Length: 369
Image (tube, rainbow, N blue to C red; front, side):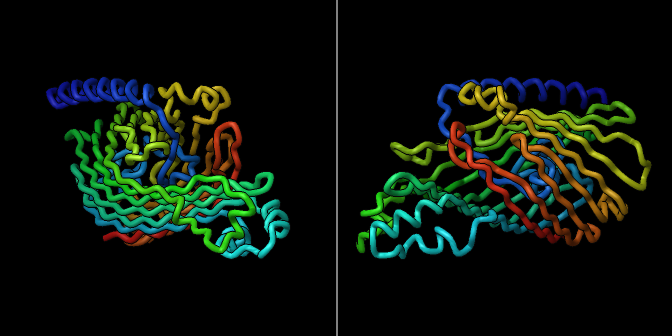
């Protein structure tokens, strides 16, 4: 056991050094900060899931978390995530505007809204070591009215993930790596009223497309301290700054996230409480304004009751803070066969100097066996 711990501490140091070197390279070529996928549990806990991600959630937050559960499992999950924008508003009529410039101008004044749709499917196998696969499809549509026209942004990501994870014999240190193949479609243009009423207007003429490869690295280190049972975690996401081959379009900027969680032994076997705090992308010098305003700070808590089997809880209540906005969530589990989670949260779209808070609700269903 001592030999295993010494070897694990050596690997831990090597991984941290590797992440630091890659983070420095990321800072030198930072492009666009983009949180490309999250789960209902993570959003309900304010996005602070790096230290406590489990199962398929690990493919979004920290690949080392794939094996935090101590039993074999195949897990399929799907989720949908929508904003509160009027379903009969801007986007349902974007391809069919009224026939005059005056009517278009009047319509665009009321058109500041956005849509967000997320579809995810995962399968994972884990018990001391783990293997996971995931497919994700995300579409974001955003419109901002401007004098005489509109700024329109539409972005679609598709990704295929493969995650490998393993742990020490005593499960004090867990490691993980994800390889990801991605496709991206992007429209980010200003349109005038005259362009929008042109019968030959076609959004497809302004769409850029590209493909890229990326990787994630993750580490979870459980400290053997009784009662509070702390966990420290580091995760590097989008490690090689994928740019998709766009000449004038930003790509994805890698981020290194650091987190700590405690699991105080307050309730014995009947209840459970997890509290976690996370500093997201702390090393990236491109986001000094976000650091000063606390936009990179994330906090979350999860209170679980009704213990079932294999560490599964019947009901989980969640809350947190992300980018300064409060989030709430809940999950219901039927053993490890099916779980339903929902979260209510706020996310900022647009640029950092012109953020647009958007309230959203996510519903997620997982089936495992």
